[in-house]
Length: 78
Image (cartoon, rainbow, N blue to C red; front, side):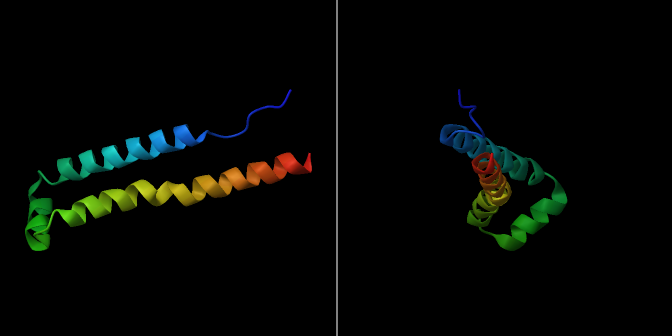
């Protein structure tokens, strides 16, 4: 019987969605403090915050997929 290695595509999508929503929440929470309000006043555009949340949610993506490829290579060698 073959052992399943790694996460499924649905797990990856749900993880990305959770990280994205969490980063949106964190940015909104930080925006309530006055140093970040000054930063928001300087930016004047909320789309940058959304873009920052998307970029934060994509950060672990490369490391995860490189780890997946390593486990697949190890499985092929065995």
